[in-house]
Image (cartoon, rainbow, N blue to C red; front, side, top):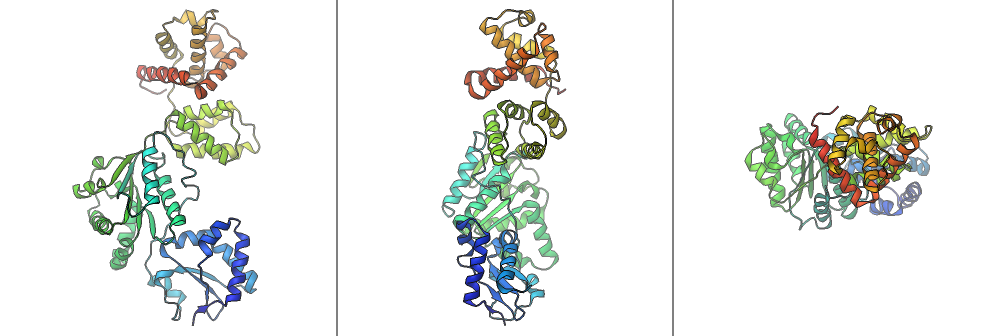
Length: 447
């Protein structure tokens, strides 16, 4: 028969576990009401609510195993099992326990929290909506539908919502799953004749978050299943959060009755980050990586990555690895960007850039190459140098020769000056934004 672990042993176990978890708040959250059971062989069993099982197992199982061995002194096993499916007063059959209970487990990226999410004009509405869901799950509008291109923060926000609710409202059940995962679980349940168990599980969740709901496209049986799941949860005043790569009405291959339901609650886009948001994201992520980057490098990264924040994270992780044995300078970053960016940066010919600068500032090419130093001309020349460095493959000497034989130091000074102004000076930001728009309008094809 399985029985609760002796109180003194439990007390010693908790004391040992606490020493291995430095965050006291985290320890209290997960272990203040925990129970340990053991069988005749001394193996330990811990019941955990189904929706939290995988998270608990991934984060605490090894710590518990080490603590059990320290306290009990034997090499017994530790099992984390679904609380709702276990009768602790009957003999536990370890071989059939997992197959007799139905659960869809999930894992979350520990870094995808609200604290690590950089809010900008591009994502503010979606952020506010999901924060309100966390603050008042029962009263918030449902469903919440967020959409946008890949790699700009949809999954981060979904994970952050689940993280927040698991900490602030641990009694509630949550499920995060990709739409592909939902479809696969449904098909598997049909194959194993477990549809009743599948439905009982997903239709009794307090919060269901499904990523990439557009994956339902042209899957009629799965759409039918989700239609009834949606209705059950909605009518029970449960929360539903959905993400997609496009607005509901633009999803093809999904029946109108589902599309209309996607819009019953609140809908918010996540746009590609603007320049200021990209700067904030780079600084935030660099700080978390303990990575020191100059303003020039931050500016270069912000200009090089057009929208995909996931790609930017990968580049910063790579820079961090190199920084342990390599000097990180602007030239190094340029070479790295050539290897790692999946989106081709738009390049222009020097003539195209000069033509746009001349048109914007009402100057001639001869003016830019001259020795004249009036303020308006100097600023135009410095912006030209900045753009030539950003949008051509010219090196510093090439740029100097193009502009009447100016020396290396002059080119560096001009580039660094504009790089700093574009971060701190609103007027310069506006000028560059307008010039870049003219440049993009002038030439459509990338180099």
